[in-house]
Image (cartoon, rainbow over all chains, first blue to last red; front, top):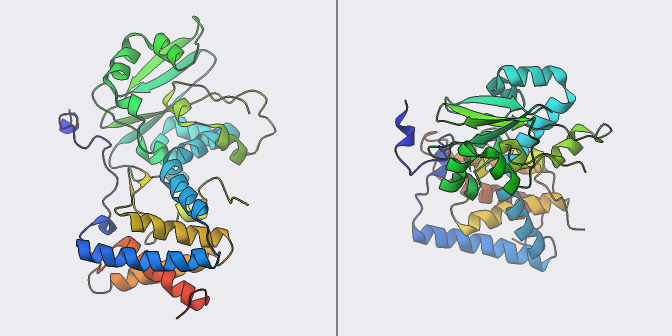
Length: 219
Length: 98
């Protein structure tokens, strides 16, 4: 058993180390850089080459959309490419790597498929293990003690709270992530999406559906 | 014209050495100026002031310059190289005075 679960300070399980992260700048250096950026920004704004609202929007989009977007592309590919789906279910880490999403550090990815008979939902009962290369950072509720304990005991009620009604004859499987294994749910492709392209399909796939607490809604 | 609603894969998925610094799959900015420098380059490319590939080339050059002496200890951080690349490209395109 890994001792990963025992220390609560790093439970996004980090990303790959990156030499560029070193924040070794002094306050003075930072101030100088801030002024340099400010000068360019004022000139560009003045000349109308950039707009303030566009700048704000861009930072926001890139900071918030990058994680789950990767997972959505994996799901869309599996929906349109049966061979890829097969590989994904057999060896998710390798299949996800084919699309260029990696950065896992020894954690093994497992993809579980929703069908008309089985609904899968993912939790990490001990902390907040999460497939970050494809989903980004976990939402706050995923880390909450309430979700972590209740989804195991009474998954149907928890799913209902997310607006997801699961019929009695559908089996609900709860998957407990760990430091070693990260689960991702392959949601069911909604009906009426036969004419959509892979990119259009990816846009339908939201983070919560890949955790398994919601379904993918038709457009 | 409000531009794209989504992150452009061309930018989001730049390969190393220009790859955007991430933690847990999400972008990391240490200081507000890094965020602003990032947004300026992306916005200018969206507006057609330059091609993203032109910026990417400048960024790779700036990073490799910073790593010349010691690849393990670059002389400046990623977004400092980003800023150097942006300044160089704006000069080249004559979009900034001086």
